[in-house]
Every structure is written in structure tokens, then in C-alpha cells.
Image 1 (cartoon, rainbow, N blue to C red):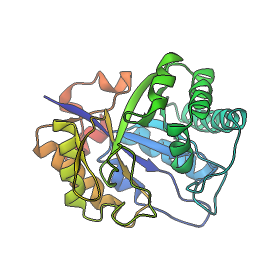
Image 2 (cartoon, helix red, strand yellow):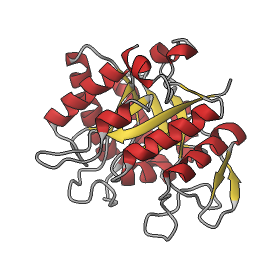
Image 3 (cartoon, rainbow, N blue to C red):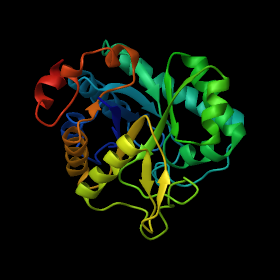
Image 4 (cartoon, one colour):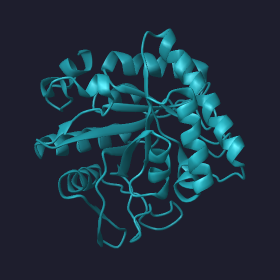
Amino acid sequence: MPRIDLNCDLGESFGVYHLGADREIMTYVTSANIACGFHAGDPSVMRRTVEMAAECGAAIGAHPGLPDLPGFGRRELRVTAREAEDLIVYQIGALDAFARASGAKLSHVKPHGALYNMIARDVNLARAAAAAVRAVDPGLLLYLPVGSAAVQVAMELGLTVIEEGFADRTYLPDGNLTPRSKEGALVSDPAEAGRRAVLMAIEGKALCADGAVIALRPGTICIHGDQANAADFARAVAGALNAAGITIQSPAPALASKSASTSKSTSTQASAAKS
């Protein structure tokens, strides 16, 4: 039976500002990428989201971004490789502390937004990101764009990389995501996102904004938690994967070793969340 990880960017509220439907989304995903306070999140949100992920049985990951709260980490900032390494170490360390305080364990790291895109195309930044993860814990998984040069860089430094595709975004013919500034970059229909997730998981293919099909086989599929109907996307994507006979399961060793009966599905989500 085919298996795929379903991840979501969560914990992106801040102070009095509430963003997303984290509790509901957490019942469908198997990996939670939790904001670490630079692009979103704050200490209290980080603690609550870590505890929520632990309760729901989702793998806990650090989601480090650029220090840009007003721009939600989606604006590129000029940072050196050393600065990038330091800000990633800082954010992983912060979330790891909350995980330990909650009796949980960090499983992975997924860079956020502009930092994620910069790492994907800049070998020096990719090396800095991988070095940061390795310095904190070489056993952490690193989520990177499928097929990007950063994947090879991280593997050369001894990290285990999980290549990532997106169900709620379209692609360019070269395999990069369609920039958010371009028409057709975002998938607006949850059912369509589910169809795209199944296409990636089973056939190793993704759709471009113009409908063209490209080869793209990820080990994890992402949905974004900051959109208004994010819970609908989580439900639709998980449902489509389950209906296609695909087991949704975290790649984290401790969690992935669980039997398929504890993997998340739309029909058994409540029991799976407690396993």
C-alpha cells in the first residue's frame, strides 16, 4: 500500500492575532511544522501548538523563517550564509525547548516562505541550513522542495531529506512553485487539492498553472494552514488520499514504525489522534 506524509504549517498566530484552525487541521495531518517566532508565532503559541501536536500524534517540526513578522516571512531579505545558519539554529533550539518541556521530541525541520525558496536555489544558503540542522541534531529530518539542488547538498552533509510537494499550489514547468504574485499560483478548491495530492502520491506527477503535467514525486505533501478554509483543505486532501488507498503516515522513525492501523484517516482520525 502506498504511503505519504501529510504536513501543514501551523502555530502561526501571534499575540492577540489568531490565524488558522490548528486544532481541527491537526486531526488530519501527520506532521506539524510549527512557527518559531520569527515570521509568526510567539512563545505561548509555540507551547500550545507543540502540546496539541503531541496530543494528536503528529510529528513535531520546527518551521524557521526570516525575521519578518509584518511580511509573514514571505519577503526575501538579504542574509549571509552565516546569518541564515544562526537564525535557523536559534529557531530550532527554541521549539526544541518547548518540545522537551512538553515531554515530546522534535522530528524535523522545514524552512518557511522566502527562506525556503532562497535555500532551494542558493547552494550556500542550502549548505548553511543543512549545517544548522546538523549542528542541533543530525537525526532531525529536513523537509526541502522535491528535486531542488538543496536536497543533494543536505544529503552530502549526512542529513535525511524528505522531499516535499504542495497540494494547494501550482507548479512551473521547471518544477518550481508558481510565484504567489502570478495568476493561478494558488489552488482555491479543496477537492482539486485532493486530486493533485493523489496524482503526486500515486503517479509522481504535478500540475502547472496552465494544466501541463510534470514529473514530481514527493515524500511529503504540504497544505498551508494560514488560509481561511485550511481545515477544508486538510479534510479534502486526507479524504482523497484515503479514498485512493494511500496510507497517511509520518516519516519520523518513532512515528513511522507504528502499524498502518494507527495511521490517520478521515474515518479513524479520533482514535489515531490518541494513539
